[in-house]
Length: 153
Image (cartoon, rainbow, N blue to C red; front, top):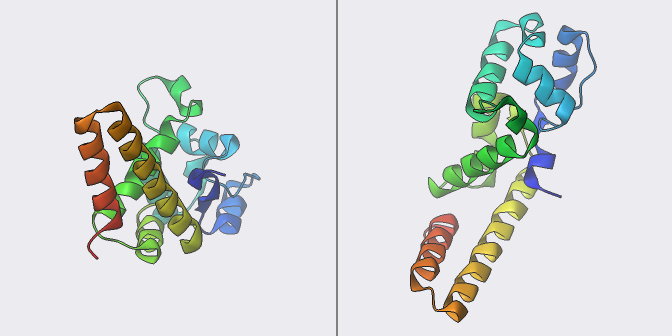
């Protein structure tokens, strides 16, 4: 299961009550994305909630082609966001705190840790394959990305 399947709306019950509509708790669910992307339903939520959800929509759902919203584009942007937070030196708990403060979404720290661990393993595989293929540039890029992700020891 992808990390984006484990990102949830904070205060889901309150938001559902204000919207007067039932939407899934998972942020990247099609129905939830539709409400966030269209913005129509957001006029019903309180100002602080609206501001954070609009920030989320602007940062992750602003696609050049509106059909891209259902092609994994938002998920890829969010994964890059998580990796950037990790590259800044934040651990799983801090990453959850930041995403919660910025966008009113959350994940469990253990899920974030698993995602980061899987990312390191993927980069190790890329590095090994690049070595086998003799692609020194890719090998170095994978090594550096892994180093950035793991952080100082």
